[in-house]
Length: 150
Image: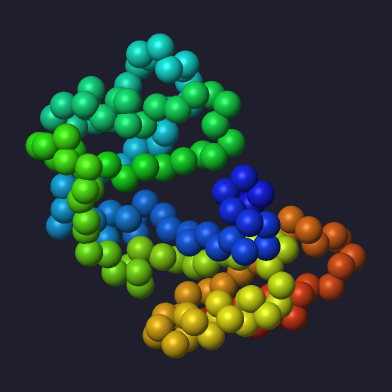
């Protein structure tokens, strides 16, 4: 997915979990659901999200089966005026939402340093990690993985 959704070597991914999302959006009317990759676009399928009117969210969490490699979780907010294309904004505290940051396995060392310096300058102390996709069983661990920013 590093290749699919960005320039190889320049991507970062913010990692969260359900408890962090619940804490972050506890004062809002935001709900979440795993995306359903079961059916085709024409297939209504069975919908599993609970709530007062779960059918309203059905189309928002459906994707074709060819996208199931994404294993996506979506946050949803149903507004009264669906014709308003400006979107809805929620204040989010990154220290609550983000558990750690992963960078592309091909990110050059200088960009990793820049990312670490930026996080420190902004006052964040997220762990910054590199996926081990390209590291073989006998390869040394890259220098920036030996010390994880606390």
